[in-house]
Amino acid sequence: MKLQKNMNQTMIKKIFVIILIVELLLLGSAFSQAPNWVNDFENGTLNIPGMYHGINFAEYSEQLDYDVMNTAKKRAMDDLCYQLSVMIQSDFKEKISQKGDFDQNEITSALFITSHLVLSGVTEKDKWDDKRNHRFWILIVIDKSSADQQVQENQFMQQVLTQLTQKQNEIYAGMETIKEILQSQMQKQNDKLGQLFDMFQSFDGLFKSSDQKIQNKYSSLHNDLQQIRKDWSSFSNDYQLVQQAQSNKLDQVIAQNQKMVQLFQNVMTTVNNDYLLTLMNEDVQQDKQNKDFKIRIESERGPGAVYYESEPIQFYVYANQDCYIKVTYLASMTDNQIKGVQLFPNMFEPNNYVKKGQRFIVGQSKKLIILPPFGVDIVTVVASRKPFPLKNAKTTSVEKQMHSPQDVLAYRGIGFASDNQTQFNFNPLGNQKQSIEQMASNTCVIVTQKR
Image (tube, rainbow, N blue to C red; front, side, top):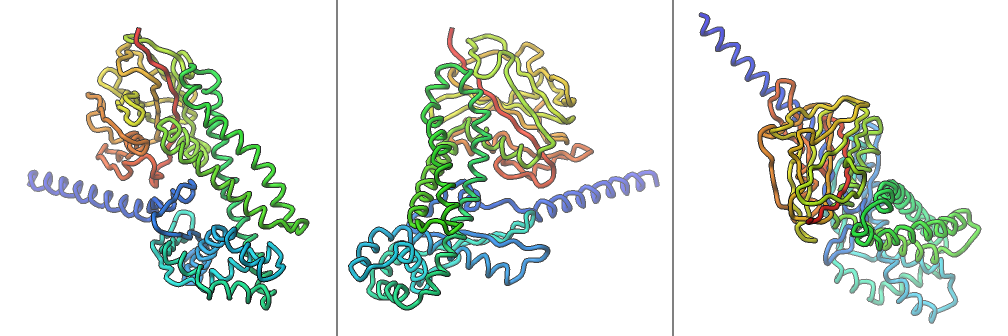
């Protein structure tokens, strides 16, 4: 009887664990992670070889319905046609000027409207329902060679001239739609600019107080950001004049917008290809999403400090909430490869619980020392209010060689343990936003050298 009772208790526990797993899985799937094309679009780095693309979204309050999906698709089509019309403007303006004396803004609108009317072969490539933010996203594409051929045909040119000579109401409506597209792009660029400035505010402190090696590596990017800051002010002023109908230089604003888009793309490409900047950019996003949960890490000698072979090293961690932490050390091997080591917790320091407002020291055991390879090394911390499912983390150090910044984001990623320490790792990738628990992250650098 006692044996039967124990078996029943064991079975109940197993059923409870299974139910818990299913519930957590359902919770995770309810807030599915953004696909790469959405992330790349928001970073300004999306490129689909051989295709023109249009991306947009529509918001909904409670339930996704046909009208919302249709609105998102229309906006995506507007985006595609706008991008295409901008690309062909220079070629067509010269041809159209030979047919009559037309206003430049009206030509811009006519090209946009005609792209809508004439293009065929546009297909839906993907869609995503962002249930967390109540946004329905859609990605549409058209083959570049097909689109280029269609705009060169006589039918396209004739339709442009028809719009200019007979469809003034549509021309004005097209100009208003272009202004709305510019407004949307301005907002997106402004948000991205704010994120970049937040990142570079941290970066500036590191840049100015660090070793010359770090300054040399990032001086070009530092200058690019200053140029964006300067150009953005001028662009914003010109755009506001157009929006207020105090200027008819819509085509000039479009050209300025394309310049800003290119500048942002250049900077974001650099950020996404750099290990340190990718982590710092992710840190800023985490700070923005979780404003009440902050973590900070620095070496005992401050940002960008120099350490020599065999020297012991300690890191100070500060948190504004009680939390559990994981520290990863990323040692430079080459420009394209980096070695990651889970620095903490470890067999000498297994306790990774940090109390809010107190300085926590990683390396109290004096067992952390500087070893090759030498260079600009990155130390990054992630924190959670719940324990990490760190299998064997308290007895071994896990090393991995990585070939891209995305590998690093995955390596420092977070999963969560249940209250009874059953391990559930629903979110192994750091670049995917956690849907179960808030997290915080922070990054610092040191320079290591041979004696």
